[in-house]
Length: 309
Image (cartoon, rainbow, N blue to C red; front, side):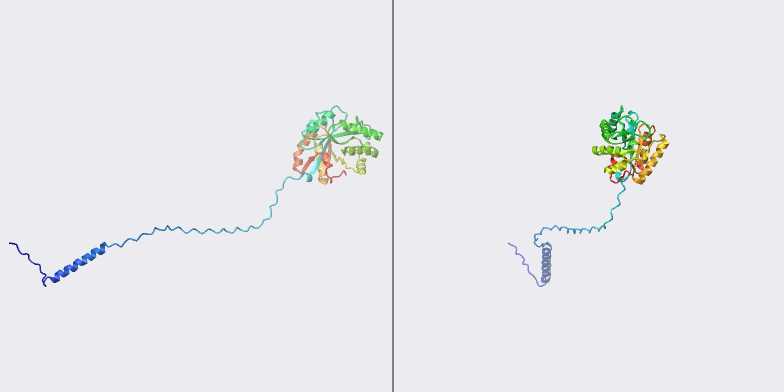
């Protein structure tokens, strides 16, 4: 026999408890829903890489205004040759041999060798002089006032104009590389206007210079040269009237004093002078240091301000 089920009945007595339980259950459900609720995810925008702001370009600083400065004084350079005191050296009596010549060709400055014509070594001396870079001159023999023999190829006061011209031209032609000449002895000839007129006209026609060796105070060379519109040079100092080294040095000092006054000095020595070459070489550095320069006498005639007086 079937058993009868018991019916569950909510009694008024149990209703408040059941209601409270239901409310509690509902509250739990709501709480669970709230806890588990997640809003739908919105698509995330890609992060924008924030670029650092560019650094401001620095403005160029204004260049400082440079005040123009006066140009510095140039350092003093070598003194121009034209402003130096010039020494012109002529060495007479070349042509007797070559041995006496050689020491003078070692001289570091310029100089001239005056060669006597018609001697055994005249041509050889002229060639050696030229090859060494020195100046070649003819040392033209001329009649002196005394009885001394001037040598072969001399000009005498009793010669005709034609003979004077021929003698001088022959002598000039016999010496190679000649650019000028001076007188050997010649105190009588250089005092004679007619003789010197012929001589200087030959020089002018051939484009050669003439140096008056000034062997006599009565020379008329400058007077005749002026009449012919020529410039000549004149010796100021004989270097070896006394051949001792001391006297040669004194003569050089006298020449320096003339150069200090006039701007130049013409000095004549001789190749046979024993102490002259060595003294010249010894004094050379001192001369250069003191502002002198050694020039060829040929250069004298390129300078307009020089005078034969």
